[in-house]
Image (cartoon, rainbow, N blue to C red; front, side, top):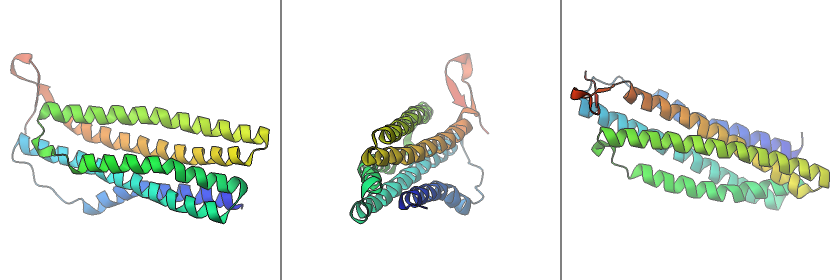
Length: 211
């Protein structure tokens, strides 16, 4: 197996391990929760869970970025040709991921979900789902462009284009899985809230059904 193949395989395996961390952590931390005494308390707990989920996800993205920048810089000095181009692109791509993860984590860490009313809770959940769906569409584009660069590199006999193409395939593939899984988890959390909505008295607006 070539160094590039091993690098791609290692990156994908580590990426999947990062994605699994929130699920494993959640499984270990879940404990029986007593019934909430009021609709307001339930809404606050629901919002806190949504924020926690996205905060952990930004931590995962941050870890992925640090991993790829570190291995990318090391690979730049330790390899050459196509493999060097692969590692260079990994490092450059993840500088952007690092910034996104940093800003995203800060936004989630400074949020005050306990103060959100029902309208704000619904709006925040829908905004996150729309953002993740948009990102998923971009991820498909990244993968397609990576395949284009790889194919062009083969036709032009360009080691740089082949390395960049393979990097985009790995990075785009990771983000596609990351955003897809995060969208699913957010939609499941938001679904718990939607399931409790009923028309308000008089048929104007919505309210939480309770208990």
